[in-house]
Length: 438
Image (cartoon, rainbow, N blue to C red):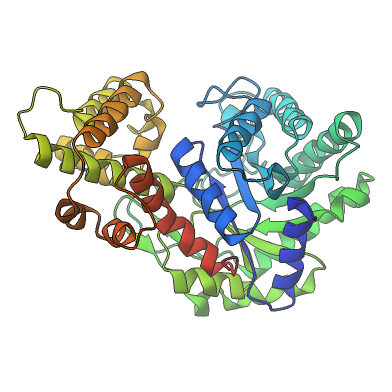
């Protein structure tokens, strides 16, 4: 049987031939999200691309507390529970570079990035997105514009060499890593402020970035590694903010789409595709924007499902019951006690910030679910709903899709089943858009 890396490369080859195949990338460390996406891939008989970002997982633990090897073990433990073969999971590292160290000198940041890249490759990650596009504290230039291509390419090649050496030292028994280059605008994770338009990467800028990066690879003796650069991150005009979605406009991106055929083996990778319609995602795949990143939409669905369950809990037990989970109130308290994950992303007055903490598409609440207080509240919520079975009429009111799934005998009213099904609505959209569903 082919492994995930080989299938991934075959999907890219099919996409370049004009076959409507693509792959979606799950960028989340949420266990319920990962479980739902693994279940979707198992049903589809497809690979699953799971990525961790440089701020989620690094040599110091990142905000998840996991190093690269920890993250792989964590995901594999979830896959084992649903009997999904490990060789069908492709692990990717996203935005690997100085992203987390922009407030120190470029040399210090690059030294940290070298350790980061080595640990990712050593752990078994085989899809490596090298992103050195960010300014460090001592970098010169206009910070309203991208860092110069020459500097970005030079640092990219420096990290690619580390990755190649790490593979030779630790992983030569397994296939060589494949690389993604480039970055998107604005910064990862969704637009931070209301914007009127998202600019599409110009074909000229994309071509220049590819040309300059290739030259640096060749000049540094990394031609073999360049042959494994399979994707370029660009901005085709898709993005989201707190309560806005920038839909894919094929006409505006058509010239960018066309240039990828000039390069052997390359496709485009697109970040922040969350909340696009299924038809728009299909069109992205058809237009060679082959690799679709999704993250906040999945945890947004997780949060929606939990809020729906809490609403049913209150209806069943009563608003003033002494043993309610109080999940939303606890989430609000936890987010206010430690505002570092949302404060700079949610501008506005107190009322506006309250609304965004609950309902923003950016879903900064995703950083808080692993806390002990919220884990306890979630367990109490599930316990209450298991001891007081959800009536079908109430399920229809708050989770109508899951109501039909229960009626059809596909799932039960157990809270775990309901949350899994809710998240899989999003996973299913991506699976169909990428032509992966049976």
